[in-house]
Length: 150
Ligand SMILES: NC(=O)c1ccc[n+]([C@@H]2O[C@H](COP(=O)([O-])OP(=O)(O)OC[C@H]3O[C@@H](n4cnc5c(N)ncnc54)[C@H](O)[C@@H]3O)[C@@H](O)[C@H]2O)c1
Image (cartoon, rainbow, N blue to C red; front, side, top):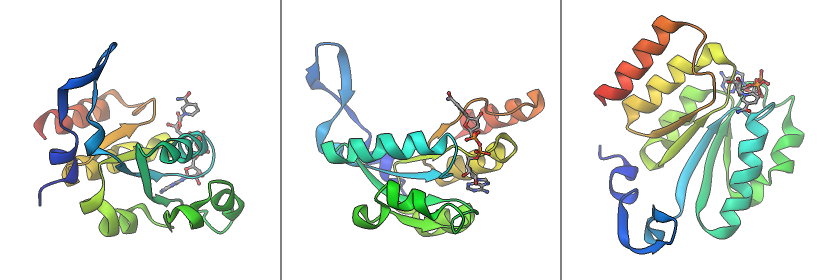
């Protein structure tokens, strides 16, 4: 499987902003998924909704095991009208969407980061991993090793 971002995230030196290189506009929109809805994940959803209006991004999916409990957030982020699919399980979201994703955001509690990051790396998806990546230095070594090897 060729990850979508392998072809769509190319950069061009033509038509660049004065500040330097920027993503090529014909590679847009980047298709994104977010692990997590509540807490700090909400700031990602808010920003992606704004970026979607510019055509830079298309929200594809979001996952959270507390989906039923925090359903008002789905309305707040306009998931229905934006056709963002929601999943209770991260693994199910990845199984359904990995092939179409350019970027995944991991905005879940820290102890979940390593496994989710590894899943993104293995799927060839660019990953924005919330800080801190881990509280375990050994785990950080493993994660950066996996990233370097990919
Ligand atoms: N960059 C910043 O300034 C900043 C600020 C605050 C928090 N953070 C980071 O953001 C991350 C999340 O922190 P938080 O305080 O929002 O955590 P949180 O405990 O509020 O969790 C965020 C969301 O993730 C969901 N979640 C839990 N398990 C999940 C799973 N298996 N799959 C998908 N979603 C799941 C929770 O239900 C919740 O809605 C942490 O890494 C934290 O350090 C960063």
